[in-house]
Each structure stands twice: as structure tokens, then as C-alpha cells.
Image (cartoon, rainbow, N blue to C red; front, side, top):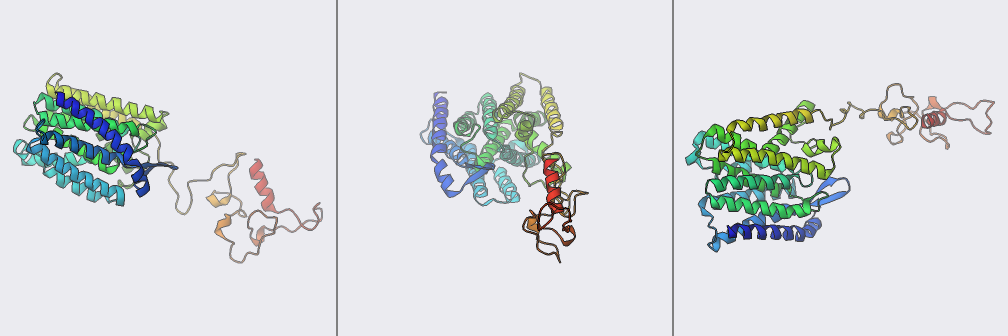
Length: 409
């Protein structure tokens, strides 16, 4: 007990310190992620979480205070390999198929097939892979992945403590503390981010530990408990997959269509969106933990499933993609200040033929425009000066008059 508290405190402080120290080298090396147009967020937080979790856990094992055991040692090695794969993805933008394959191979080494069986073990490999990738998807906004990771780690640690699996309980507590120290720098507006390195590592450890804790028990109830523990990550993944499918967008293509993005569209602040997602994660983890301990019936998991379904259906109605781009044209003609349609370079129907984009170049056979004309004109657009023109030496171009009418409404 005392070692658990000391280990968690050490992990919290060490993760916060490493995240701050690694921030400048990450900026200099270009290891950054653009969260907004003019803000670069270094991806040093993930490396700090990985190093802290592994160091504190291995130190407890070496000093004999909290022996890891063979299962936890294999889990840390596999998690480190997944984190290394994520770091490669952060640096060189690795394709998604390689992340899926590498995470699945690592998951195949940590599933306890003796307790689960071959078929259930294969399903567990797929589930661990999906949860790890879902946690990577949660790193779409400041503070979201860290908050959900902390809540899930504490819930999984409580489940491990009930099963008297002290090694897993300590490891998950250390992970939760490391993520808390990282959140000191990742709370909106974030100064560091997890990146694929930290998010894959956290999701992999949480999913693999939860599978090991539930192994050997009722399979149907275990599916419900595992779902409740990771309900928010599942909701985000399902929401993104369904939305991109309905919009005809490729699944690997990114976009502002995640949970936090849609909550921001509804008017929440960045901090408010993170808190709302954290509360939802806490509710799901609480139900999963109580169902695992037997203090709540397994039927309560259906309430979590219903809540996830309701949230997904409601947030699907939030527009995030905008109007589709027309073939050979833009998204549609914007309006000028006075309410009139802008010029014909946006492909507006009924726009005047004389107004073209200056960057598109002159039309074939067109002669140079007069010096007073603000935009290039074709030969048919130049009007000869009338005798009644007040301005000596030239007449007013139809382009100028049309342009002024658009500007003035």
C-alpha cells in the first residue's frame, strides 16, 4: 500500500518534469502536431508517460518492493514496442495499416490463452488492437486522451485489486499517475501532446490489463465490463466511422469530426468539452467496475450501451464537414458585404461574364485591359466611351460599375 502511494507520487512528478524537459527538444526536432492554424504542440508528452511508467514499474521490481511477475514484464515489453511504433508514426507519419498490424502482433503476446481459449483469445487480440487505436483517436483535442486514460486506469486498477492482482493494480496506478502529471501540461490550451507514442501505449496497457483481469470468468459478463470500461473510446471510434461512411469520406482521412470537435460546435469551451468527456468516461468506468465486483448486475451495462448509442445518434446531427466541393468548382459562391453574390470565379450561376479571377490569366484572343480596370476583361466587355461621358479621354468600364454595385449592394 505504501509503495503504491510512493510509486504513484513519483510517477506523477517524474512525468510532469519529463514532459516539460522534453518540450524544447521536440520543438527543435520538429516533432510537433498542429492543433490550430498558428499553434504547434510538441509530441513530448507521450514519451514522458512511457518512460515514467516503465522506469517506476521496473524500479519496484528490481528493488523487490513490488515484483512484476512474468505477465507484467511481457506486457511492459509489448507496450514499449507499441510505443516505439507510435513514435515512428509521429516522426515519419506511418501508414495506419502498419500501426494496426504492429499493435495486433504485440497484443498476441500478452493475451492469456490458457484462461481465455483460442477463439476468445483471438477476439481479445482484436479488441486490444481496436482499443489502442481508439485511444490514439481520442488524442484529437487537448486533455481528452489524458483525462479518459486516468479515469480508465483507476477503474481497471480497482478491478485488479478486487482480484488480488497487486502487480497489475500497481502498474495501472503508476500509469494513471503518469497521465495525471502529463495533464499538467496538456490541459487546454495544451503545451505538449501525447501523440501516437503515448496514446497507443496507454490504450494498449489498459486494454491488455483489463483482458487479463477478466480472463477465466464469464465471457458474456466480461464483454460487458470491458465495453463499459472503454465506453468513451468506443463511442468516439463508432461516431467517426459512421460519420465518415455517411459522408463518403475515407476512414483514415482525418477531420474535425470527433467527440470534442462536435461538442465545441454545440458551444462548449475546450475545457468544458474535456470535462464533459471525462464525466462520461467516469460514468462508464463506474458501471464497469461495479459490475465486475458484483455490486451491480451485469444488466446495468445495457444502460451504458444505450447512452453510447444515444450520444452517437445525437452528435451525428452536428454538421462538421461543410457542403461538398463541386466538381471543377468551389464550395459555393460567398456573399459580398451588401448581400449580392460575389464574382464568377466562384462558379456562381448567373454571375456576370466579365468578372474573372485575375490569377486565371487572360482569355484566348483577349487584349490587355485599360490601366484603370481593376481586373482583366475580354474584348467584348470593353464598352466604347459615349459622347456624354464627363470624363475626358475615356469612358467608365462596365467592370468598374459592376464591381461597385456588388460592393455597395
